[in-house]
Image (tube, rainbow, N blue to C red):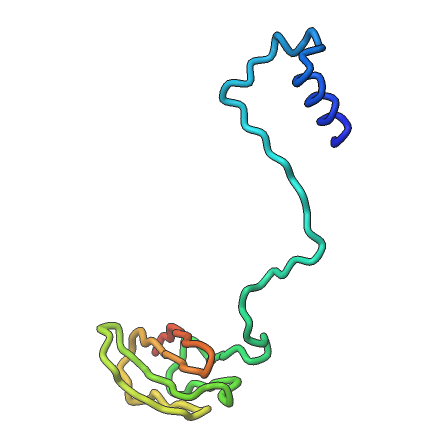
Length: 120
């Protein structure tokens, strides 16, 4: 590909080729593609093993939080944005909440993450 590009460029600049007079490059877009061997496919600096997980979802009574050691605070909001509950527990009892959608906001030292939970 590089050799063909060099021949084309040299002929075009020198105007030494008969075919260069018959080419219309108006509106032409040229792309040069390269590849990198040392590419990072993730921009998340936090270790993947530290990812917060909450299950089961949907649930009826109890939620469990994995990697609770990274969590500083858990705030639970209803679908109107009202704060319903705050905790730091690994096992969260939501038996008294009415069925619906709730948003669990997890605060760590590095980030904040919100997970939608459905209460049956």
